[in-house]
Amino acid sequence: MSIRFVSKRSEVFPNMAAMFSLMLWQTGASQLVWPGSALELWQFPSPSTESSGPDETTAATSTTQKDLVHGLIRREAVRNMALGFVGLATWYRGDRKLLGGVMLCGCFTAFSDGLVSRAVVGGEELRHWAFVPFMLGTAAGLLGWLG
Image (cartoon, rainbow, N blue to C red; front, side):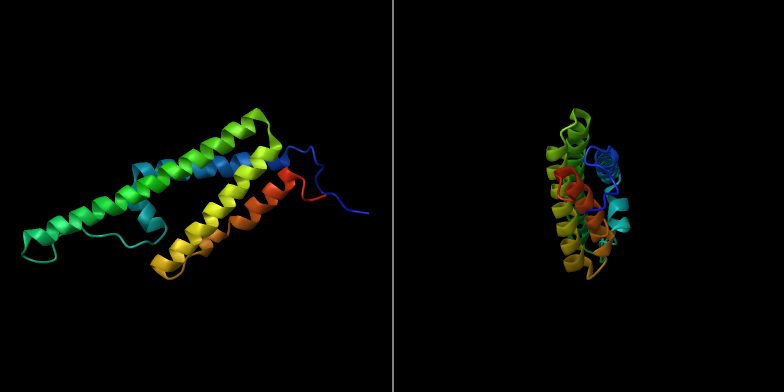
C-alpha cells in the first residue's frame, strides 16, 4: 500500500511549476535590465570600465570586456525569460505532462548554471543546485512518477 500525500489530479504540482516559471521569468527580466547586478548576485567577476593604466587602449579593452560580459548575461536573461514564459503558457493551457517536461528542462538549466558557476567562480554552485530537487519533485509529480 502506498501513501499519497497529494493526489494525481491535485493542483499543487501545476501551481508549483507556475511559481518556478514565474520566478525564472522574473529573474530573467531583472538580468535583462540590470546585468551588472546579476553578476554581483551570482558573484561572477565583472570587468571594470576604469583604465588600469595611462594607455587609452586598456580602457577600450575593459569597455569591450564589460560589453561582452553584459551581453552574455542579457543572453542568459532572454533564455530564462523564454523558459519561464513556456512554463507559464503550458500551465495556463493545463497540459500536465508537457509542464513536467518544462520542469525537467529547468532542472537541466539550473544544474548546468551551477557547473558554470563552479568553473568561473570556484564555488557557489549550490545557489543554482538548490532548486533542482524541488523542480525535479515537481516534474515527477506532473509526469506521474510518484505513484
